[in-house]
Each structure stands twice: as structure tokens, then as C-alpha cells.
Image 1 (cartoon, one colour):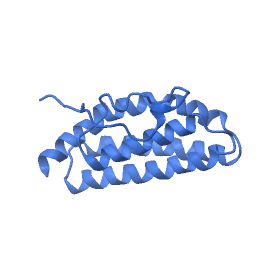
Image 2 (cartoon, rainbow, N blue to C red):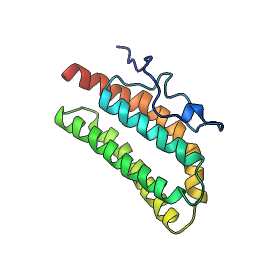
Image 3 (cartoon, rainbow, N blue to C red):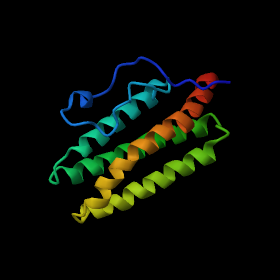
Image 4 (cartoon, one colour):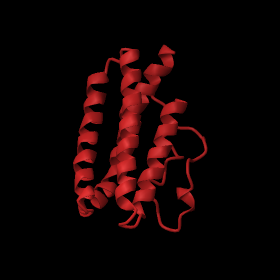
Length: 149
């Protein structure tokens, strides 16, 4: 079976119109999982990451906090879907969610102390993780859930 996560849905947000290159610039080219709720959450995540990538030090702390809160809600939604449908790869997928949230929370503690260096570096690493996570774990989850609906 081939997992498909490509589509021609429109992009979320206005990050593609930015004068600076966004951290995640290919969301509209292959990162859709064909579940409206998850695709919406992914679009919001991309917009937050890209906004953080160009934010001032003054705006960085509340935006990073917003990213953490959004990611908690996003992962909670996916975790509930996996549990509700008894997804066989739930333990692995959840462990990845837990790992990323742990990193974000730890880095957010640094940001709250006015230390931005690790957080700004983390943002440059997040797009590669996001792409891999979507194309592997979220595509598999979406295919499973779409068959179970």
C-alpha cells in the first residue's frame, strides 16, 4: 500500500508573502494528510513557526508560548484520535509527541528567563522534524483513520 499525503489544497497563513524566507516554505507541496482537522492544525503550526522565525526579541516569548500551547492541543487531538480508533502504532507516535513537547517546554522555560539562543536554534531544526513527522507518522495515522471512519 502506498501512503499518499500530497494534494493541491491552498496554503495557510500569509508566510509565503513574507520578504524573508519562511522556516517552513513547502507546506502546500506535499505535507497534507487529507484530514481537515489535522491539516488545519499543521497549517497553524507552520504559521506560528514562521512567525517566530522573524519575530523580535520582544514578541518572541509570547509567540513561543503560543507555539507550545498550540502544539499541546494539536498532539492531544491526534492522541485522542489514536486512542479512540485503537491505532496500532499509537505508542510510538505518542512517544514522539511526548519527546517534542518535553523539548518545547524545556526551551520555553529558557525563553521565559530571557534566553533565546537555544529557542532560535531549535526553530531552525523544527522544519526538518516536522516534515519527517508528517510524511511518516501523520500520513500513516491519517490513512488508518480515514479507513476507520
